[in-house]
Image 1 (cartoon, rainbow, N blue to C red):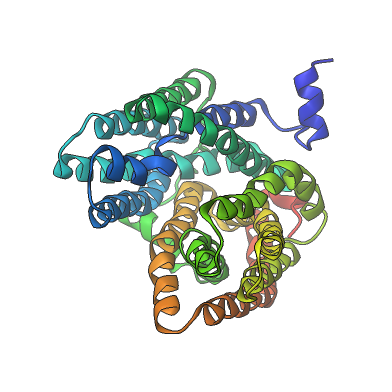
Image 2: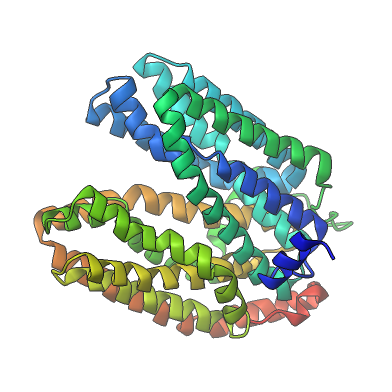
Length: 416
């Protein structure tokens, strides 16, 4: 028996189609080379000598590009196909990485950073849509959960590798990241068939603008995205507000690294088992628990304690993150019309991009004008409200899914 297949089956990956595994392995290879994002600010300030303000502007431009990439990539996945959007986006992203790595002036680096966010993130909605195309509805939560797990596994390995490469020269980070991204694109082009469902004969013509806007006109979908956006705002407090809070309590950067390591360790160790657990309950219940755990976990940071308590808090909200990650994109796939799977996944990814842009400023404003306790207590309340909202809209979401099942019989076994 193939030992790799045995391990994947034990982790909960048995029975998923070949195309899924090509995307899964390609994602792992790509994440092994994810060197640019975590070291971009250090590169700009230490290697290029830019001020903190200039570096912040460039990083923000990169984020703005990523926000625009989500709906654009989703629309392209529906219009020109998953395969071309995936491979083309990855190849263009690799080119943008080389561009920023060999740019020297502030203006060129700013343009390159924006292009890296815009082009380098085009592929994400296409991956999610392709998985929805090839994986039956009953298995999607497991498939998305396994993908989320391998992303974190690859990133956990990439961080120390990036540190070693940075010691040899920051330019190597951009080259290595570009190479792994380009290889992922080649993998897709050679091994992944087009998965976009065939258009229905006689269906009315759709406009590009209409495809982009349809998810934002869908009341049930927007009702689902509201708590997702709320939890994303909470999650991204860990990037700025949490280290500031812990530093104010006397924790060192090494302490912060130890605290945050809990997140990666738990995801790598437990995500496959969490996938199995959430696959046995209704999706609204799993999402409600995700809101509860996220709110309580971040709320624990309000207590002025040391490293062990902070590690416990991170462990609690990480469980919430793990509960949501396999379920939310599965719900998006359930709610999307077949011909607009890419656009709906793009709108979902856009929510996360917007949250990553808003959360640092919002958290900083609360810290600056009120205090840390108010910020973390507010996160707790918002998380609990998001969980309750998922339960409140469960009936409307279920009715939508039942209506779509009449058109898409393959959804009959999904657990909603």
